[in-house]
Length: 363
Image (cartoon, rainbow, N blue to C red; front, side, top):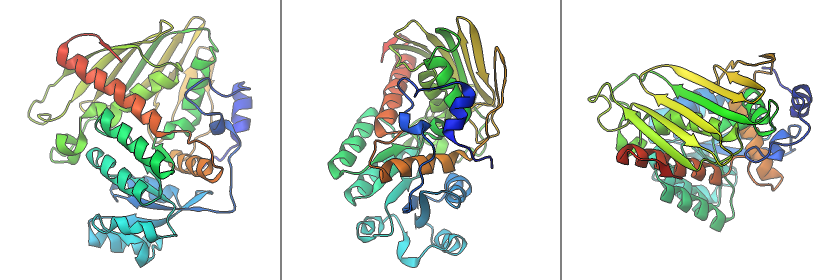
């Protein structure tokens, strides 16, 4: 892994100030390291928790894996042995609320199917624990608002798992677009999708996923259009295409949408469960930037009209976890707060409304 100073990165990229809006100034500081490590409990021990978050937590500086929550006893035993988890720090979904009495656990990371995010964020807040919720934040705007309100009432931090707010190539895209490095951005194109496999998985069940490709990976393309411009869309127009109405009976397969921004920027985006696509492209008055691949776990790659980008490749999850933990330890607002997830939820609601009505929808 190529560890690096964000200050060195910014100097190399020619940036002397924080991004205008979507990227917090705190995200650009040198990595904060505390003498205390926050204890993290993972709720839901699926692929992402096991192969990305748990491994990242073995190298983080500001937090460590101390607890688990799972409905599978055999999985709990495996994790306790593999990651040296104490018996008292292992819970199931019924006993989860007892976490309120556990002083080892400071942060709860909800890594469950989308429709369960709301319930467990509220339960974690009630237990007085700081919360990280995997994206998408929830399956409705109302749920997002309730999650934010619950964490504020409990005086705990709420962050969303937007790892790309800590990743050098996407930070550079935000810098180029927001600071008008090549002049005013005019056109944005973003895409993210993959060919989904097992037809029986939870991602294809509306009751658990809330939506299909749009909720799962479309949020990357949506986020990219927002943080690369530093603006919130005013209007959206969207279309849905299904080539397999049996497999995608309950959720969307492919969604295309266009957004109009206040400054006149227009964006065109696509997400799909039918094909592998992954790109971010900015066209400005005097140049362009392209990331491809743009959003995966790495290595990422990029170039501009002036040449190739040669930026550090990092562990996205470790950077995200350390960044969020640093904000908690320093008593600062999260770089990726619940409000950020709410903004995406509002745009996605407008996208689905446009698909339903066939009309342009105000966000």
